[in-house]
Length: 438
Picture (cartoon, rainbow, N blue to C red):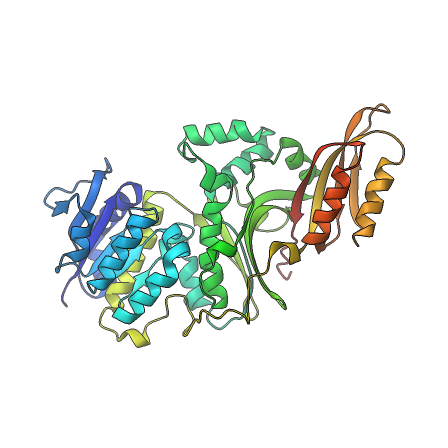
């Protein structure tokens, strides 16, 4: 059959890995696709040192690839928002299928891109945009197609998981482990996207759209980072039988969808609690299949290239199929802009349990007043840890509450922080059981 000709834009870590996998495994890939897949052109500003493009048509202008009439599939691996958006829309306008690993692009501009692709009858594939080499998008979109998805929860940023893992295993401070992660190349020099949850929110937005059949709504995701987590929080969570993980969580409720990224206490026995280092894992609860877990490398040159090339394979298989009969981009046909039937819930309306850490003057009546404030907001205490201290000294108090609405907890924390015997802000970490149906 006629070869599928690929244009790769970006030859950095993932682009170089994609080039090498396509080249090294060309024979096996061709057998799986039923036709050869060849690299027609590459567009790059720099070349990964492990990537040899000798004899390949190369250009520094990525838009030349997007308009090249010999290119069937454009692989966008340049990252970012604006240039990537323009590049992908240009490729679509020129009738090219698109494969991308750009989670920010899909989360923010995906609705526009999919609309343009549908009108042009071309494929946009983005497996590598979430969790690197883990095929979670294909699993959600196709493998779990019989299920009503109840919830999705995942460790979808390796940097944050590396930091929390080493804080727990070695009792170290956040700043210390972050510096180590930067030195090892696991964290960027500006780690904001990773440690403040923005990267995870991009990925969760995509997973939620595929799980529930709603448009991409990144701007409505609640995002909270891990930079205020202390070694003491990690230790106390352990004492209470929990592990702190930076999770992306989406749940279907009677009132709408939850879409939130934040530090979370989860029971030690949960599968997600035992995912360590830079690994990613996503748990999905379906009404028919029950709990499933997808685990593996969430980043890296060839793990991510594995997902990119798998998308290229899918394009090669479907390239002659009428676009009306292809699997929809976000799994559901006819996703409408009207999401009134399944809105994204504001964080203040979401119900969870809570871990609270406060620093209080050790004198009679302080803890009783804290308990009264919580009770007035309709919540009770499940567990309490208070260290010994000399009367009048500051002592940390650790509380674990039963489930309550976020708005009630916000009010309770405001009142507790206003107490004369409370020093500094109250630390609040949400608690989830993530019932796996055992």
